[in-house]
Length: 330
View 1 (cartoon, rainbow, N blue to C red):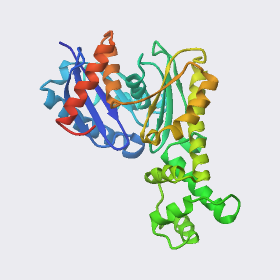
View 2: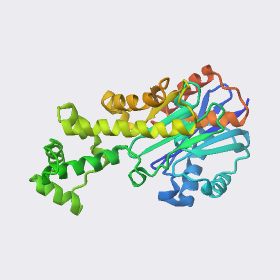
View 3: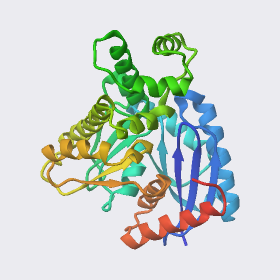
View 4: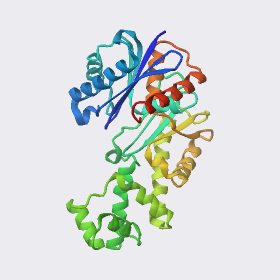
């Protein structure tokens, strides 16, 4: 029996799963944040080692028994970073064939029925990546959010919401109940107090308040509804860029929706769907329902030249869920 490792290296935590060639998850480990942009490469290595040792211990396997490995890495944005990434992975002491990809790719592999297509990530930030059928051509955005005009994750949504509150206060824009929503959240004395506190830094209004924007929209505020419509359209345009890069316009494929923003439901996904279907009429929007580390394990299996059946994909997702319920929530 051969065994494969999947790693999801995120900005807040690291997850590793070991599975056999039938798709049965046998080991799980968790470490700290592993995005080198925030913790450096030493921090990345330390988090990986912690997760790897736990996964090996729970599976009762050794490093030498790992045949293939897939690493989805937050902050792995440019080809120039690959040598440093390779050097960090080598410090794990694995002999396995490995593949290193941006952390948006495992979600695509896990969420798309055929393992290819486009993945739109909208959580605290946003990202978008795509792969062709053969996993040879990759489409991408920069991954640098509002700096590069890529929206919208929760951070960008709230950033724009506060701009609109400012427009309302200065009479550049129409009234919006978002002002009262954020005043209540911050316990501000007035709209002016809210804006002063926000701009001076003693009121914190960040990505965690995105659900309040959806709540205000559901209560009928037109500005909030238009804002979410904008966010959906922006996410759709990110996907369209990938679709054009990979010549997917006439193909039948999945657009995977990953991240907490999509908990907002149809108010966000409807404008996104309309935007995408104008470019690719046969595209299907599907919600990612399994941990992204599932995709990392599948990538590890590909390094062993396994032909992965739909049954293997399903079994892997099921056994990872069972394993995590006995260990730690993924």
